[in-house]
Length: 382
Image 1 (cartoon, rainbow, N blue to C red):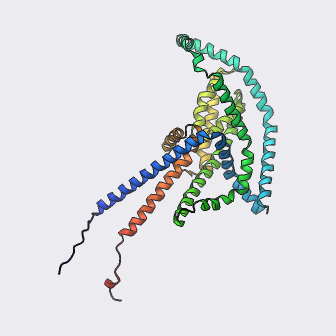
Image 2: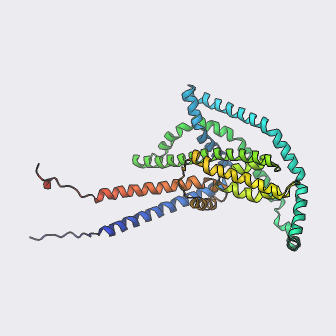
Image 3: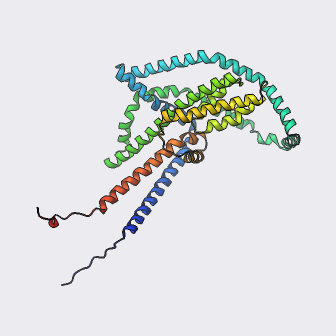
């Protein structure tokens, strides 16, 4: 009687672990490559349709940030959705009017003073550079004179096209309140609509797609809600500090640098290279004013790193600072500019979470496979 021998390959535990991590690495690389490709294509589409996409994106982000306020109006004040949205718009309009009444006169005054001081700043800058770099400045002037500046300037047709692009962008921003209104009014129905669009997938795949989609929305909402709060606080702090020390256009520079901190470290870098020269070359500028401006920036950054970010963000991204910088450069390149830099941190945190989730699921499956089956016939008698 012949017995057929089944061919089987027995791996050592170390070989099984190596095979497991190899498969995991290949899966992670494939997933990451697919995601990067999809996002690259998405970036190209956004670049082509930016006049339509940007207002929609701004309205969607504002809706994600303001959804808790709508839910508060609904539950605490017993309002329906439409009444809650209208009430929120009334509150936002009142806040904007209050801010304009309180800040606009000082902002107009500082802006006019800054415009009037531009010629004096240019003259001081030229004389300072001439004194400190007597040889370098004539060489720079000769190089600029030899350059064909006219060929570098855009033609009349390109200039007109660019002006129309800017006008279209501003008109699109005017529709942001309308997009925000409808997003707040019907945004809670989007999850059911998304499940309906995934009818071609199995229920398990639908749950996975919805889970990762909700995960990305949660990261995006938490990041922008926290970063906008931090940016506004930093902008107000720097605007007040710059006004106290006597910087020209203090409100504009302070609020601008604060909002730039939506992208981590960007406000500090831009502030260092723009505000400090203004503090030195303005009509009453001096080295002392430069030091005072540096103190304002340093104190604001210290408050942000020690109090604001730990309390508001609570380290929600979980990313190392070096990885944050790398992600900003990477996504800025993928999306071709500021959009990628703004979305860099939530996108990277989302991808890291997806990789960890995939890795834990893979390990759970293999751990279940490694557990030997218990044969009931070999159990000892009771």
